[in-house]
Image (cartoon, rainbow, N blue to C red; front, top):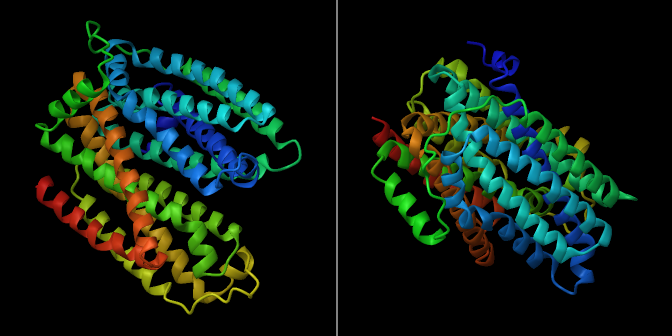
Length: 424
């Protein structure tokens, strides 16, 4: 089946649009706030902007830990399409709060809004992934997940760039506030067309014993080996992705002597690579749900990371030299290998992640799938937090950015070997 035909169906298109608009708005608001903190609000508050940016990143991730258990319970107790509509309506209210925060120029108010935005994402994510098996045939899961991943990274790219460009312009706070509310409203409208589903367990109790229930969720998932290992392998993808994405600005400036437009272009290359790799999965697997090619994709990420390290081995950048822009960078043949390496890492990442999501959705019992997705969000966040701490330690020890990229290679190769042993 041509996977793009799913976009012509009511059982998939409204979900795709709702997810795309939500991911766009997450990154549009987050990018705007981080840019505002970096260039205006941080210094005005008398706090190092670098510290505030990391605090803000942690604030956004925190709800995925706090609300994992109730999010899983709600997604099983109620119609998942209804839950999506509730969450998307809440996003309109949250983004109205963001518009007020931008108008007041109040950083702490905006950080509270950021926490609320993370909370609505924590409730939406289990619904987004657990509803797919209810609306798609088994042979369509690879195609559906591929399109969702492609849309997500396109939304991350466009949302991040748009927020960063708009917020510092004249009257930027009004543009960002207004657009955030408009996009949230559009996301709620598209959610109204998502077909209804049958609740999995209407007797499910919504417990507020967060730590206890979260631990119990994990205990229930561990015995499901294919599901548990797929979840961990997915989290490794998010760890690797966070390592590369976080280092692009520093890599462009200190290693390549390039400006922020080059760093942004790396984000675009990475997003397009993952999107194309995600779409290629359906053509390769022809709808079969299998992790057969995941190890090969992991080896591809590892080898491409080695290549990126090798082609980044350059003399130190002259601090007095003028930085180069996109045109100078991409017209220099010496930089072609860097572009190719980044694209290959991302393309292999798309091939790696889509089958794992499909395996997790297909192998998890229906009554546990929402809990599995909620736990996956927790491990994703943990792995990304570990990556941030680990990279910070390596940098403080004098390890260069290309060497950090290189460190990803052997670890990802080991992950590929582990998936190969588990998959067969």
